[in-house]
Amino acid sequence: MIFISIIIGGLCGVIINYLADVLPIYRKPGIPLCRDCAHRFTLYNYLIAFRCKNCGRGVSLRTILVHILSIFSSVFVWLYPYQNLGYWWSIPLIIFLGVILVIDIEYRVVLIQTSIVGLILCFVIGMISKEISLNSLVITAVGGLAGFLIMIVLYYFGILFNKIFSKARNQVIDEVALGFGDVYVTTFLGFLIGWPNIISVIIIAILLSGVFSLLYILIKLFTKKYKAFSAIPYTPFLIISAIILPYILR
Image 1 (cartoon, helix red, strand yellow):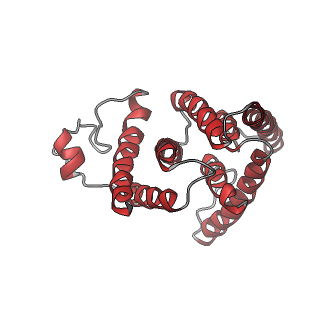
Image 2: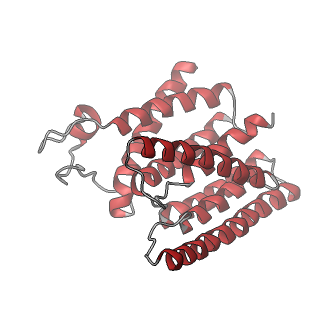
């Protein structure tokens, strides 16, 4: 059975890589393009040869990492189910969160198309993980609403912060601490994790991003490449927090 979960994890990796390659370009499924020469991949070159026949660009580090992490995730949820979900309900969640993570890290964007899917998927899975009842409906709905309200406040606070510092420094600061995509992410994670756990998810995400930011600044200062107000993707920390919290609470 572990072997089956390894195979399924590999297939999840293929789907995640494919969607992360095409959605930022087409906003829907389409033919993958080489990131170096924009040449269209053939099915053979994309899935088997892992090489662009036009420019020769080989398999990327991201492709390999996604496959490894997808297989690990598949085996892990087989052995240790996420919340009260069965294995098969965990698979679409792995694929969806994987796509969100990769696109946000590479392109610094959360697509409205994936956000709509996330709101529906996480609401359904959130209900199933809490056993369908009126109480679970309230916990799921309030979790999403709380996530939205908290993050929308932080989002506008970030905009206000930028305006104040732009005026104080007499320069335009384009980078923002949070994007509106983070609001969508916190909303559908609120559906998934429920109330009041979404509060813990946000707190853990803030702590994780703070530690990462400190290390990032220290490394940039050491390499003399530090640039003030450089933003980092925040969505990965929200997703990681939502993943680890149920295991912490066990």
